Length: 270
Image (cartoon, rainbow, N blue to C red; front, side):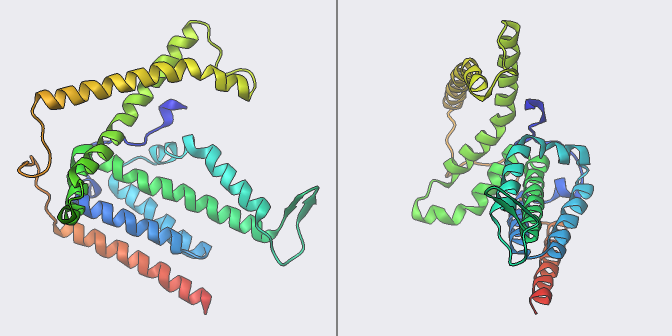
């Protein structure tokens, strides 16, 4: 399961998505989230889903990896779908009525709709880290938040913390996997027993993981301090962010798809 977590990982490439300006990619990701949440029917959601698949095809990221990003979150996705299935009521006769559980056709539709929305939200947001390196992502966040510097907001520090957190997710996952393998080699049983027993078996994993995380944080802080690292004013960047025609083409396509979703909502509301 841990090997299936791809959050925060960067996969180098030379696709049109990789070559886009990181600031534009962040903005278009926000537009995509808006697109998903303003979709009011399956047609609008289908347009958004087709758009995500098209972008993945253009990025060169395999569809296997796209599906792999969903796997660790399947329990949360199923839990959300079940809640909508049980608690959403309709005006028609219930399809299933057992004890305190009553399922309506509207509940099934809402459950499926939310299921697809969450899945493609995860897939779409994962594409940002798949095609953007942590360093470039830091520069993009700092550039987008730069107007907040006028009110003395620690823009650089915030961007750096967010990027370091993303950068160390794969490292912590690898460390967790090593600790689990070491504990299993010592005879620890982590895949058997009830829920309480499995929860207790996580204690020998969490304690060394926290120790390792704090140790890595201390080493990183020491390394930055020894190199006299200071962010903010006067700091130069190796790569200068620059918008190109490719970014404007991407923005035009994304806004066009957003417009299609809006038109679809208006058409079905009429």
